[in-house]
Amino acid sequence: MNLKALPADCRPREKLLSRGADALSDAELLALLLRSGLPGKGVLVMAQELIDQFSGLAGLLRSSTEELRRIKGLGPAKRAELAAVLEIARRALAEPLQHRPLFDSPQAVRQFLQLQLGHRPHEVFAVLFLDSQHRLIRLEEMFRGTLAQTSVYPREVVVRALSLGAAAVVLAHNHPSGNAQPSQADQTLTRTLKNALALVDVQVLDHFVVTSAQAVSMAERGWL
Image (cartoon, rainbow, N blue to C red; front, side, top):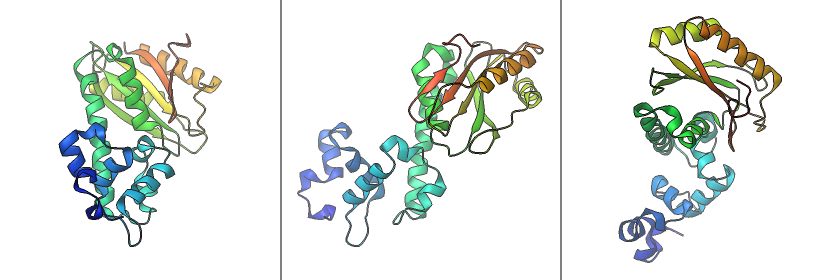
C-alpha cells in the first residue's frame, strides 16, 4: 500500500512526529529513509523485505555497498542515505571512546567493533590506537585477507603506532565464519604483536575476535 493511502496517524512520518521515533517499527523507520517502493510493491513491504534479507536493521547497516547494489530498487540515492546512516552510527559510537578511557565503556567498544567489522565477507585486521589515557586516537583497518585468513605484518603496526604517538593499542579482527572462538593462530599472532610493540613501549590491551553476533575479548579469557 502507498503511504499516502494510509490514515494520517498511521503514516511513519506523522507517527514519528506525533508519538516519537520509538513508536515506529523497524520497517517504518527504514521506510522513512527509502521514501518510495517499486511498482506493485509499497515502501513498507520493501523495507520489511530488506530487514528480513539482512536479518535485521543491524545486518542491513553493516552490509557492504556491493551487497546493497544488488538489491532491486536501491538506487544510488537510497544507497547513499543508508551509507550515511551507517557512518553516523559509527561516529556516534566512536565519539565517547575518544573522550574517555576505552574500557570505561566495554560494551560500547564491542558495539563499535561489531559495527565496523561484524559483517565483512573477508577477514579484516584492525587496530584501535590509543593515547596515554587509553582514549581512542583512531581505528585503522590495516590488513585484509581471504575468506579464511589474512596476513598481518608486525612491523607495519609498530610504525603506525609510532607515527600516531600511540601509547597502547587494542587489536581486532573478524571471523566471517561466524565463530568468534579465538584460534591458536590468533593467540600466536597476539603474542607476536605484543612482543613487537613492547620494544617501542606500546602496550597491547586486548585483542577482540568479532562476528556479527558478538565480540570476544582475549584479555577476558586470560590469553593476553
